[in-house]
Image 1: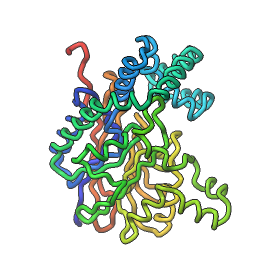
Image 2: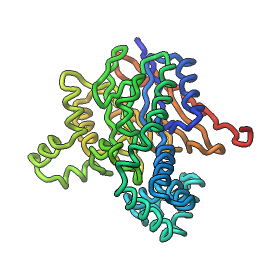
Image 3: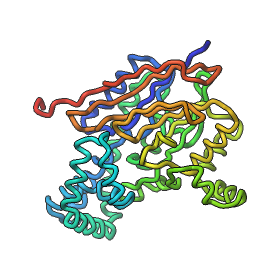
Image 4: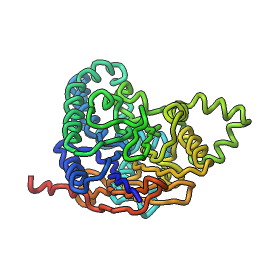
Length: 363
């Protein structure tokens, strides 16, 4: 039996001091896998929001209170707008939701009218000056991403990955130490790795020019229901040909098959209440119908590690419980031992505590 080892991690949301990223580098170099795979969100949208807020303040003269509201509740506002207030409130009743996340949303709902007015005012003014603000944040954004890339360069094995909903298109140009699977599959030690961002969340309040690729797949929660709603076989065929994620995967894997699929949100129950992409699900449905083995690696859902082999494929989710929160700042990563002949996972090493955030009182 020939074994390939894969380090899988996700949702590092690298902070300014790079401590969490350095811990992943240390883990990679101590476990010495054949390949490392990231399921996205190496970048933290909150840091970009701070850059954007600073530029807005300088260009549009917002006061500190307005910027604070935007920085604290901008993503919450976006999530509520996308998913719906009642659905979010229902989700918050789930005991698995972290106390910090619940408190943040509840605080938003208590002050919703005032917060919405502030964010809408900032957004409208920013739209009018978007080009100037985008230009103003570029030097800091390039430095931030370049610093992440430099850190990744210390990993001593091949590094593969896909973008998450926080990762701007700019990473393609700046990060040279990670091969993006969204562009081409990669074969390592007999395993073919493929990937797709499977991301349809737009980070509201940020220059959308930075995230043009985030809306490529259609948000769904049930693939069978979706197929029924599309209509006839001809309608479905037409839909597939027009879906960018499905088309990219079919084109990339025209002469081979994927053994490991890396994506951000995951599929079916892996995606949880976040939904997943129709094109990716349609591609996966075709692949599993052939009876071929496939391993799916994903992230996105903080605090909800998950493994399953009940959907026609094996898969698991990695990621941080709550990045940036000292009291729960624990990341999960895995080293998978994969039989290169059967393409099956034979063993999983679980690293529940990859890093712990530094105590702010010691700074």
